[in-house]
Each structure stands twice: as structure tokens, then as C-alpha cells.
Image (cartoon, rainbow, N blue to C red; front, side):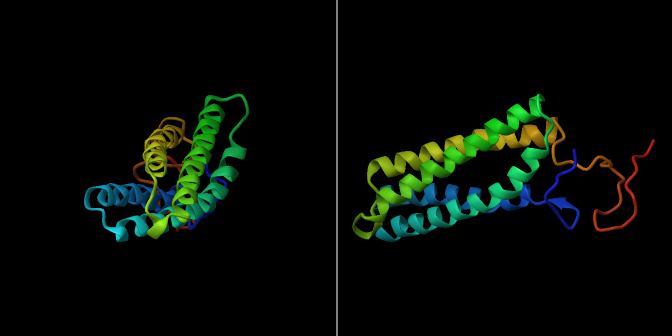
Length: 164
């Protein structure tokens, strides 16, 4: 099923998720570095990374929602897509709460619960990322119907036809 939210011949959602996923994962790494070194710079950087990651995640959700709404009802893909989307909303909520907990702290020093929320968010993001992979790799959501090893460039105007 071809993605509905496309740019230059490709689905937009998979391109957009790499930024929030990287930012939020790096925030957790910086929290670990802060715990090891007690350097305030790591805590501050983590706070900024979380803010950027949550904003990026909200933006990435828009084309993801467009694609989800196009999945036929009553299919396994619709159920997996719902788990993927709901799970990612929870990921963003975990990180948003983590950000709020550290916002008022001295030099953004995160309380233990804020760090735990980040760890939980990254773990859940791994699971929801797997579900996203299941949607694309196994269920063919967001994949061009004419995809095959010798398909022409997505930037070409020629119609894509599978080879025999």
C-alpha cells in the first residue's frame, strides 16, 4: 500500500522519525553521562534534546497519521498501526513529563524519576519502532506497489512495473 504522505516519491513519515528517535535516545545517553560524571552540561543538553525530540515526534506523527488513516479497516495492519501510533504517543508523553520534571530543577539536574521515564521511553520506542518495521517490511504499508529490484527511480515519471 503506497504511502499517502509522500515527497519526491518517498513516504515522509519514515524520514521524519529518525530525528526525534535520535534526539530522544541521545538525551538518555547524556543522562547516563550526567549520572556518571555529575557534569551539569550533560543534564542541560539532555533537556534541550528532549524538547527538540518531542517537537520532532509531534511533527513526524502528522504524516504517520495520514498513512494510518489510509490503512483498510479490519486488517492486521490497522491493528499494528494503532499499537505503533498509541505507543509512540506514550513515548512522547514519557519524555514530555521527564522534561517537565527537570525544567524547574537547579541547572536542569534531573530527578531520578525523570531519568527513569527517559529509560522507559527509549525502551518503548524500540518496541514501537519494531512495530513500524512490521508495518513496512511485513505488511507492505508505505511501500510502492511497483517496488522491485529493478524499479526505476522514484524521481522518474515513468510508470513502475514489476519485472517477470
